Length: 198
Image 1 (spheres, rainbow, N blue to C red):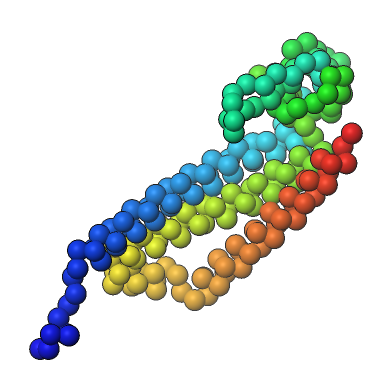
Image 2 (spheres, helix red, strand yellow):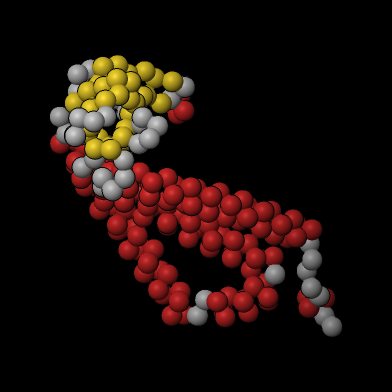
């Protein structure tokens, strides 16, 4: 056996592999959690934007207040809500976002008194977020698989060959492309809708 044929087990290589696995696991947890969380949140918002849940009516804004600082800053506006059938009147309903005093918005009100905007822009925005979050979830799952393959290359390659045949890999790739296109299209429609609103 020649000296060149001896296996190289340098501590740096082992440490680098361990660090890479830990980073991939962290990214997998992060992207998966964000993907699931944002998808659930957007799906919940979508049922109000499409008027399939909540009480339809109009909200007249009379005051807005900001809370938090920096990226955590959030603006909430308060106003008087009146349902379309005039059965529900709430003088202190709230809605997330910044609006001018006196603005009247068509909204859906949930049981807690929080209102959600309805129309093309909110619906497209929620759909764009669902597509984007689904891509994030798949990126997280891919990161988990990569971490497993890096930690145990032989076992990982065998499992990958069983779970990810070429046809399945192509289908997932096409699904990711479709979701990316959907996120871009719905995002553009939402932006145009928000800009067109008075």
